[in-house]
Image (cartoon, rainbow, N blue to C red; front, top):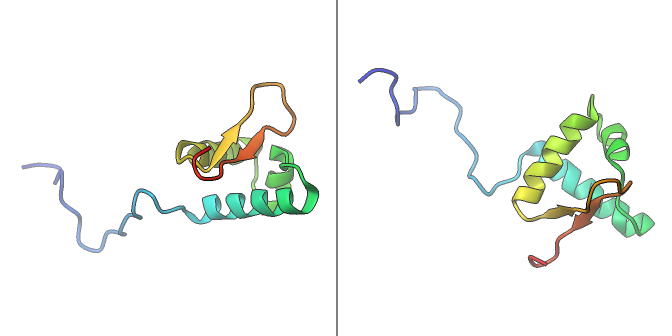
Length: 91
């Protein structure tokens, strides 16, 4: 059997559990929560980029999309400046 499908190579890094957040996901979620608590509104993508040291807004969007896929955040429709909303208890 070539390719070793279904096998883990010796010394290969272990993957995280599917529901566990990564480093950047944890950072972004924490920053969004803190900004909403402090300012009463969600941060813009540019604010997240600058505060957390992302190189480009597209990287922020990728992390936000993952958090949204896990049901932790929701994005409002296009054309809104501050499009992020926290999801509390799946609502």
